Image 1: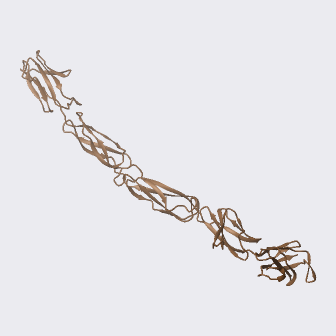
Image 2 (image 1 turned 90 degrees about the horizontal axis):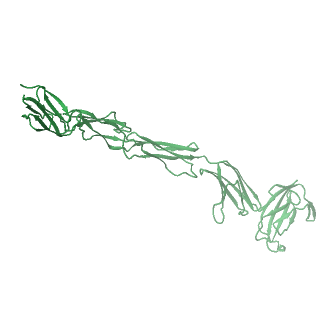
Length: 428
């Protein structure tokens, strides 16, 4: 007769006690790794203790869930069955996927959720990892994950290859040339845009921009570059632009004594003025005779009888310039100015002649000579009255013409050079 038995867990042993009688049987696990959910993750070895002795083995090793000890024990030959749930094999990661499509050209530019799935033919899958991938950048970025079975075995890492680039490219803006002057451009300038990207590479950049106005002291040209992943960055080039020349006007010359004075008016944006003269100094065809911020220049290096051509050039901060030309000649007879109103005591003056030992000055009124005199210096003071050719003359109203010749050698020889010049004055 078989006796019914009940199972009782005592510590690490299972004691099987028949419902009638004093027979007993128990086992103790001597080796093995216990897992989760009642599963073992390795082979299990047990020691079996029966009282009275039975036909059951005294020890047994279980290598799989199919391993079984099935025997009888005790005086009543009760049945004894012992079996363990064993899963020593890790699960397999069978799939991995992203929760959305790439952002551009197969590239991800911001965090993407990656999930993993697996299979286990023994205890079954308990869980698989998932999470967001947010870097580092790379054309072969790898997101990894694992799966765990119900016995607690963990798979080796699975992986998902991604192209990930969250870093914008580096963009530069480069002008085609340097400014004309002091940071100013005075003619069209082209700015090109270029970029570099260490991961996905550059896809495109804004075309070159050509600026040719309007004038502006604060111009900014901006462009962008885009990488293959769709990331963008921009760069700007700031500059000043002025293509309008300054104004120079009312250019005049005044001849006085042995000098020519050049004057001009300039606009407010003029920074410098330059005066060029032809013929130049020495043997130069053209010389710069003035460069500065003034609006006039007195040239004391001129020679009588030579026509000088002056060019007044005004320049603004951007290097634009405006030019006006004017001519002037230094008269031999320079004082008073032609046609000037004079009176007794006025000095008539002329340029000295290096070969003259004296001069002959002749004065005419309405075509009639009224005075001839021989000063030894290059000047003569008009008297209020005088005697000439036996007649008494006074400085009467009218327009006078006067001429001067250089006297060469002793006066007694009356040897004269070429006429130095003639001029007029008026007495009122």
